[in-house]
Image (tube, rainbow, N blue to C red; front, side, top):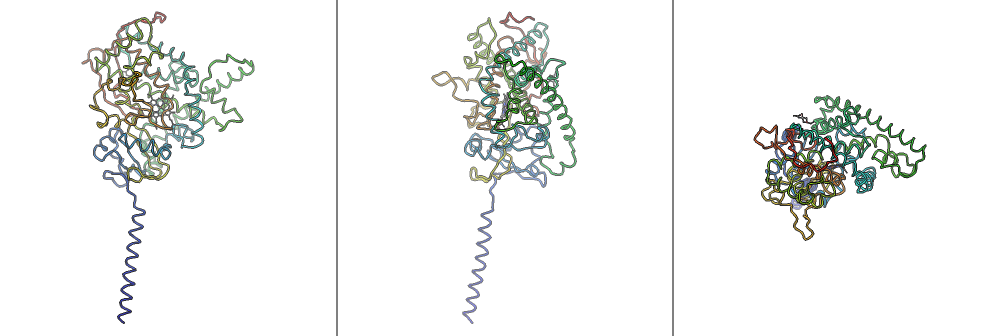
Length: 520
Ligand code: HEM
Ligand SMILES: *[C@@H]1O[C@H](CO)[C@@H](O)[C@H](O)[C@H]1NC(C)=O
């Protein structure tokens, strides 16, 4: 009897222990440890915390919850990285797991359902296009071939400023700089200018701005299933409209290209057939039976749109912020002007080839991109579960790398809010500053980093440096209509990129006239 009882007790103890161990064990196995997170609301999660300027909202959260945060935006799990160390973990140590981008409704809609190149999942199509970008489209040789085009566009930009200065009128630099960069990109992409008033390419610029606005609009339907059905924000309709407008223009331009190619082939003009624009290169590949990937017409159109959206606003905003900082920091402006005068002289216009000899101008651009990165957040998607800093990151999470916050990290930048290009002045024996802009230094990431980093950085830096150097060389600048306090408002506005909330409207005052060849 006693035996039986002790046997039963033993059995019971065994049973309870086994159950306990099992639940404990299973629990510890399935328990995910997410990075710190603020309190979430039901359904919305953390959507209510975002506000119109997500990089600023994330920055505030990171001050409170640390450099690695997990959020839930509606039903989408998200991670925010806000320090150089965490950025390096994602972009270098675990690079492969974060080499895709999240897809959203607007991008899918606008890119013919292909997600184009910039939002393509990491895979064979993206790799093919990336190779093409590096070796041809945005590679050194193509950029060199188009140097005369950029020089021409810089000259007509100066010409416009000269006219304004002679007439003592204000110039809307926000508008003129976006025209400049759109013309550069458009002529490289399809041999058309954007700002010929009646030109169809001007339509392209307007459509591209609309695209940027739409992609930059936070679409609730991406995060909350219910909004998918009822297009509350009316985004679906606008998407359709913009998509159709873009398609009509692109079809027309592609047909023109095809006609011109046919004629050329009939003439069988060998050699001397001029510089091929992106559209020609892409059409060549689409007609090539042996190409590794068969490019469809949709792919070509989506790629051209990508290049416009990724390349024009970003590179026009950067010289705007730079000049705004210079107007507010006259000693920096004066120092830059002295450098240009002593390196370039006063009898010719500064050119792209001068940039390597202008370290202070380069430092100004670095400092501008540190404080005003044109693309303040790099977006990635996690493709497989992984562990970072002891935390679990789940596949399909959206990753926001807050480049804007990283540029203000007081651990890496002393007096981070102060505009001080001197921090980037040459310090190595070759007269170069060791901090690069292309993702080798994780405390300065304006172009992202790694294989998914910006393929247009070389082109962008040529345009941005030259446009700024020209504005410094030829003019002195007065803020506003010349009657204000003489300073420029530095408030940021909402958008896909990092625009100024106020357009930069200035009075250029002629200083040099180093280009007698330009008639005004
Ligand atoms: C100042 C100007 C520019 C800035 C600050 C900038 C910044 C960036 C950033 C931060 C990314 C994401 C990088 C990442 O996820 O690691 C990116 C991607 C990209 N940029 Fe730029 N960019 C600029 C100009 C340009 C130009 C001029 C072009 C082309 C004409 C261009 C084409 C692209 C493309 C195609 C991507 C997507 C690449 C991919 O997904 O693989 N960008 N850019
Ligand atoms: C300046 O140009 C921008 C961009 O084209 C435009 O939105 C803004 O209204 C213009 N501002 C003035 C004062 O002309």
